[in-house]
Image 1 (cartoon, rainbow, N blue to C red):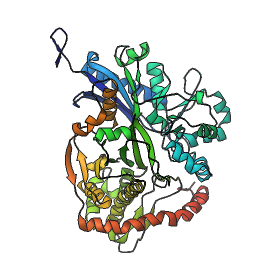
Image 2 (cartoon, rainbow, N blue to C red):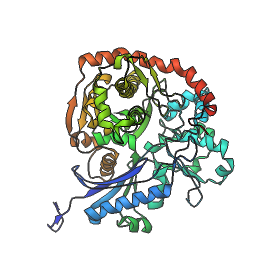
Image 3 (cartoon, helix red, strand yellow):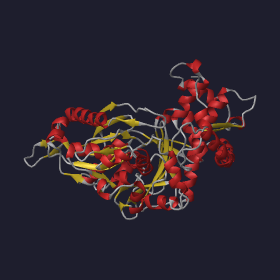
Length: 516
């Protein structure tokens, strides 16, 4: 408690970080010292009405934001809330009417319907230059190819769309009556020139849209003056409550892990995975293998995301070990631990959901290579886990090839519960992996960013000190040597199988999964 002007004790100010994720929103109230005071989460579905589509109802997500914020405010008290600050999943796209009403579902990063458009752009003469200017890989996840798809497939709908935005922009429009997008979210659209912090004219021409159809660009620390009357009632906050626009979830996860200093990378493995490091200026890989997204003025996050993380273990349980029951994770990990590093010469390309970094292609499929009669299911399970870590190893290699120093890695995600996963990641990456306690995730990063924007802390650099390292796993020298010898083989397999992937995609429509 701090004394007020009259000498009476005043409650510490708190900032509520709101993390709008792919399948749920979480609101968390943090004190300025980093203590978590209250939290609430609400889920919503991700639907696939057609092959390749992955969409959501933006109104359901908005309601989840309102419900979680209100629950947290009721717990900590509205008078303590110094402001809201937002994080959101990247790459979402939503068409709005002139009145701001949704004309399309929310198209998420997982939507792959723009694969053909992305490959056409990527293969064009200006494809790599587009990546270098925008920092966003040309991939169906990003809004640029999605917009090209809409103009190819839904031209009449496009004529009705007054504005194109993402989920955070929609939520802020409803809460604050302001259509703005921060540099972080914008840097993941493929539409913003990261060197000029302005919408890229060539990208907009390719997308078939005008600058006035996009939200106003603002820094991630931009503060909106308050809530609408409706927003205030729905959240239980005064209308004068400041709202910090915030950033995207990937860069904010670095803050949440305290990975903000040079050479300190953040690694996460949940359903998918990512590896990112903070730098002080835009860094673009000449070969287009890593992304570059904004974090705060003067800070950028460079790295790569992979589609296939924990989802691979889930697939292994469903497919290789249905006899182990509905939650076979522990038994699967025990099976994997029973065989040595390298899985007896069995490699798995874990591309069950296609892949992002460092190849950024919707083309690849999963593959086991090196299978012999001697291999058993424990080898198949371990090879799947090793494949996920090897893919992150390719991302790390690409980051270093782009001139980035990575001297320390902090990790988080569901995989961190498993000693085998932890050790395997350290062995494959060939470096120490630190695991943080306490504040994990983009919600804490959003709150820290909000504290800086509101003048409650001097800089988000405090994240490095607020986040405590709980444990560090060091590589086993013998196992690390095995994985190092296999990495070039793993890397070569992608290019070797591209013709096969291409043929399988062409034949795909004639090869249904089930009869009838």
